[in-house]
Length: 523
Ligand code: NAP
Image (cartoon, rainbow, N blue to C red; front, side, top):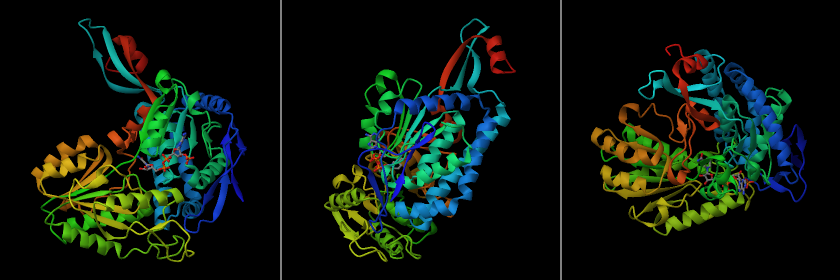
């Protein structure tokens, strides 16, 4: 039996107690086990703090080169990592690439952002925010906002669906900002993160202590975090809310970023013609989001608002798109969608489909487990891609319940921007949503009314229909996160992402001294 150890305080640690088991979700065969019981988290944090001091002394160029090295390392082991992603995650080759290549790409992007910073500001560790300004009538008295690396540890807790990307999109940003990392992948799919950590440790690319791995429970780690430390969490809204309330967090001001559930929407405008390129793009986006990673993407479309006059045709097009997808063992060529990742995921997804379907009609799929093609009969966490057509925008829990699997709800509306945006806002804050249309007045109202509810919004019109990225794809140059139930957090976004690991301070004093200290030539 493969035993996954944690990498803490400079050594591999095998936990005591009853281990958690990791399975292949297509066959339910146990593939590994792990326990993190017994880790001394005081020692973990002390070890990280030493590494933080080393990282912060490095110039931007050195940290960028380190991140670039990690990118190359994973690229060199890409095939092995893809294989692992498929076995532990129930991923097709394409899904596995989405995760592993996403990690490699984001590391590459942050190495490049670091190189740009190094060219722009050289070795100085602070980022200037705004201009050096006169603050009162006294001409010599001025102020300048700066961002400096915080002197704490970055704790990262990730969801099961992106063991590579989730871990290393966070790591890339934290490392560039000079923060040492303690990372915890979701236990059920930790094998890929574990292997990436092995590669990282063997490579010696990052200073010892700058990356520690906990495979299993975090024990008392969080309650030990202090005023300069931070927690970046990705997972369910319920876990996020619980972790925010970790005893002592509020008192000590531990910084927390939460990326949680999201009822992302697609809203079709009334002017989109059936069968047009824009129509086909919307259909393709819905089908991709339902089936890629078996719908287990935080950014996947969950609700599609379609004008009353178009909904029958849209339903038909989506069903046709889905008909080309074979559900089964993702290791077999030709399979387009694998199982969901865990037994509890299977239970939650089927229960969610059942609850939403009570208020509409199941067009295709349904709330029962199916057998996957090429998978052992009766085994595997397979769900049919499921489309539910609701009777109205007010029907049931469609705006409240995130079905984290291959299911989408078609929600009718009257085609007006007012009704479309009101339906979108009922999701109470989402990571991203897409609107499809060419009418500028409609798009303008949608932008004004929807953007405050979203971290990212894609306005897809006919002229860019063949150029837009799939809406579920997170790019490192744009922020990832969303208001309200999506957690209120913000990650990535190029240099913007660094701010979470840095302290913004308003420096006030003699403008000439400030200018000299900060290297502002115009002062
Ligand atoms: P989850 O059950 O909330 O778990 C997320 C992570 O929290 C896992 O690593 C889990 O560890 C850990 N965790 C749970 N309880 C903890 C505790 N008491 N102390 C410390 N860590 C704890 O979520 P999930 O089922 O893995 O992921 C699915 C959810 O994540 C969905 O709702 C999805 O929308 C959301 N998600 C959001 C984003 C985003 O970027 N916004 C991205 C991906 C997923 P164990 O595995 O060991 O329990």
